[in-house]
Every structure is written in C-alpha cells, then in structure tokens.
Amino acid sequence: MAENQLGGQQYLILPEGANRLMGREAQRTNIAVGYAVASIVRTTLGPKGMDKMLVSELGDLVITNDGATILEEMNVEHPIAKILVEVAKTQDKEVGDGTTTAVIISGDLLRNAGSLLDQGVPPAAIIKGYEMAEEKTRSLLKMASNEINIDDDAKLQDIAEVSIGSKNIGGESTKTYLTKLALQAIKQVATREQGKITIDRDFIKVEKKEGGSVNDTQFINGVLIDKEMAHPGMPKSIKNAKIALLDVALEIEKTEVDAKIEITSPEQMQAFLNQEEKMLKDMVDKIVKSKANVVFIQKGIDDVAQHYLAKAGIAAVRRVKKSDIEKLAKATGAKMVTSLDDLAESDLGFAGQVDERKIAGEQMVFVEKCKDPKSVTIFVRAGTKQAADEVERALTDVIGALTSTIEDSKYVTGGGSSEVEIAMKLRDYATDVGGREQLAIQAFADALEVVPKTLAESAGMDPIDTLVQLRSKHKGKDGKVYGVDVFKNSISDMDKLGIIEPLKVKTQAISSATEAAASILRIDDMISSKGKSPAGAGGMPPGGMGGMGGE
Ligand code: ADP
Ligand code: MG
Figure 1: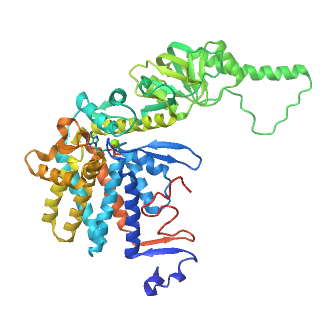
Figure 2 (figure 1 turned 120 degrees about the vertical axis):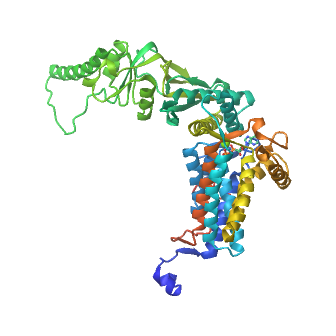
C-alpha cells in the first residue's frame, strides 16, 4: 500500500470498481453490522426466548431458537457477520451450548467499543482493555464456580434441565425425560483414565425419524443404522449377534482394462458365469467360517452374494457409512477387517439383539443390548420434521452442557447471576488498572450485563430496574447467586432454584465473544473487489435480516 501512504492514490493499486472503507468509517460500519447480527438472536435467549422461522431459497423450513442454527441458516454474506457466525459455530463445536450468549455479548462489546471510539479512545486501548478484562473474567469465574462430579445426579439433572429449558420442544415432563436419556447416554460412553473422565460426544449418535411423539424418543444401548437388510430372505431378528465389520466389497471387481473375452458357445458363457458365482460363494464362505451371523459392510454386496448370505442365515447391511462402522466397533467390540482372508472369530463383536424394524415406512437396523457399549444412540421421534430437528438440537445442547460439566467438574449459577457478579468485580479491577484501559474494562463489564438484561426483557420485566436491583443484591452478603427468575418475574437465588450452568460453557462464550469483538475492532481498512460494497456487502445491511434465505 505504498502509494496510498504517499498520497492516497487508491486508483493506482486497486482494480476499477473496487470499494474501500477506511479508518473510523470502516469501524463504524463493522460495529453496526456486528451489533445488528447479535440483535437478531437476542430475543431467543433463555426459557422465555422466542423461536425464529427461517425459510431457505428452496423452501426448506427451520424453526429454532438455537443461536448457531439461526445464524448458519441465514446465510449471511457480510464478512463481519460471518465472523459472528463463526463465534456461534466454534461455541457449538467446543462446548455445544451457550451460542446465543456468545453472540450477544460480542454484539454489546462492539457497541460499547463504538461509544469509546466516539469519545476518542484509540482502538488499541479498547482491545487491550477487553483482553485484560477477559483474562480477569476467566479467573473470577473460576473462583465463583463450584465443584461437581459425575455421580452428582441431582445437580447434573439441574444443569441438563436449564440447558434444555430454553428450547421449545414440549412440556416439563417431556424435557425431563429427554434430559434423563442424555445423562444416561453420557454416563454410558464416559471413560475414566487415571481419574480423568473423558466423554467423546461423537459416540452419542442422535438419529431421528418423524412420526410418533417426542415422548417416544428412546435410548438405545448400541447403534441404530438407517439402512435395511440387503436381501428379503435374510433374518430380521437375531439374538446374540456375532457381528463382522467389513471394509470389503462382496462383488467381483470389473477389470480396469478393456479386456475382451471371446465367448463362442453357450457352454463357455455358463462356465464364465459359474466362475464368477464361485468367487462370490468363496467370499461368503469365508464369512460363514468366521461364525459371524450379522455383517455390516462399508461397500456393496452383489446379488449373488446376497443370495448366499441369506441362504447361510446371515443378515447383512451394505453401504454402511464409515462413521457408523466406527460407532458399531465401539459399541460391539468388533474390529473392522479390510480383507476377507484376515477375518477371524476374534474380530467379531457382540450385540444381544439385532433387529430390522419398520419405522415411519422405512426399515432401520437396531443393534442393541451391547455389553457396556462405548457408543450409544438416542432415537428421536416427533410429529414433524421441524420438531424432530429442534429436539435433536436441544439434545446436542444438553449433551454438550453435561459433557463440559463432567469433564471440567465445575459449574456456576445462571439466570445472569454470574454475569452481574463478574461485572461488579471487573469494575473494581478497572479502577485498579486505571488509564484508558479502565474505560474499556468498564465497557466490558457493561457488555456482560446484556445477559441479565435480555433475560429480564424476555420475561417482560424492566431491564434497567432489574439490573439496578441485581447490582444492589450482589453488593450484599452472599449476593452472588442472585439472578433473574424469568418464571416468577423476580430476582431470586439461582442456586436454590437449581438454575446452574457449566463453567466451561460460560468461559468459552465470553472468551470467543471477546476474540471476535477484538478481531473486528482491529480492522481499519475494508477492501472489497468489484461489485461488493464493504458497507452492505451482499444482503446484510445493518439492522436488517436482508441475508435471510441466502444469495
Ligand atoms: P444459549 O444459546 O446461550 O445457551 P439459551 O437460550 O440456552 O442460550 O439461554 C441461556 C441463558 O438462559 C443462560 O444465561 C441461562 O442462565 C438462562 N436461563 C436458563 N434457564 C433459566 C431459568 N429458568 N431462569 C433464568 N434464566 C435461565
Ligand atoms: Mg442454551
């Protein structure tokens, strides 16, 4: 950008039609866009939050109040909006819950930074103050947290119910039922090594089919495969299944080269076919020899091989996804085999029951009653596809929240109580720090309070009054547990009400919110190529939902 520094002669270095926003103007626009995106998901926060309906260009319908899903489905085009979408996605991936919180805190951090910029505080000082505040917040939150372990069922249940509480998927008893399934699943896949508990969320499969009601959702001690048995003559129900997992095609590979086989008589034709059939039968014989009675195959099965398998009384499922094969291995103890010659009885896994059942008009294979499986399934049922999707998202949040709690063994109080407490302590810290960073740390504290304010608003309480009352409660002795009771429209002891959340979810939300805000504030030059305006860049004008439905 040498030319630009010399004389602002942009035309020398930028192609014709390119757009550029610089300095304060770039910051102003970016802050407005960031805040606008956050405002979109704001109204979904907490148990009194509302849902959003999103319609894609193809007419697909999504009804949700999940922050990450809303932002993803909106297909936003503006680069700054995309940063906030990333915040939600990261939060989802890392801890599975707290996506809305992360995004709305980020929005307020940006807005408050805007006021500081107006007062002449340089961006570098704001960013430094924000980063100091974030670091302080992590240690303050940890100090404010309480211990919990995997056997503390009552508290884990509370955490699960708070997590699912904000999803509109049915009544109290339905939600409690779902959280119990999630907890059961987590305890089943948890592994303990040298006192440390690890939970691999990938091995809690959430499968769904519309039909039935949410209360028909079930826990499967094993894996559910959305496929049918390869041949109608195969057994549909197998007790004490001995399971082989194969990454082999039970087919004759067609030759790569264009070989021509000259067949001059019907006898020759028959001999050729017999040869193929024999090869397939040999393959099946190897499976029979291993004593397997159920096989899951990643590749295809030739009709002839299907016939021989059925004749041998072996159930087989073909074209099973690799990820499902991995889950089956974890659930049944089977080893995946890549060559039939290597297949031995010791490679087989076990399931007490394997069944093919017809669900909503389609066949599915249930691999159940596994012995201490480290891979399980929750099979979601609901009246409509949209409802089943939202139940799945709710379960993902609960599983994320419980996993974070158990692995980290710490929780904090919810309902905005932790945010008010940390904000109060940060203001003291700001005074100690002094200088220009002090202002940024105060702005950070204010941004955290967007959580209790939004919760109050969602319940129809006056946000400012509520905040003032909360602050004064927190100044008193044992005040740190006071938050917004959105059901009674009052200020209450969140610990007593069982409104508690994983420490890790909270910390992660605040950290990624800070990171995103800081990276947006660092930008003082937006250059976009021809046809894209950095101010509006394709359908995400500040304050609107113009990007909905995608481009
Ligand atoms: P996120 O995507 O951030 O998890 P949610 O919609 O799940 O957003 O809302 C989480 C917020 O709602 C947390 O601050 C949590 O403490 C609060 N919350 C959940 N249940 C209650 C409740 N019963 N009363 C008050 N606040 C609650
Ligand atoms: Mg949540």
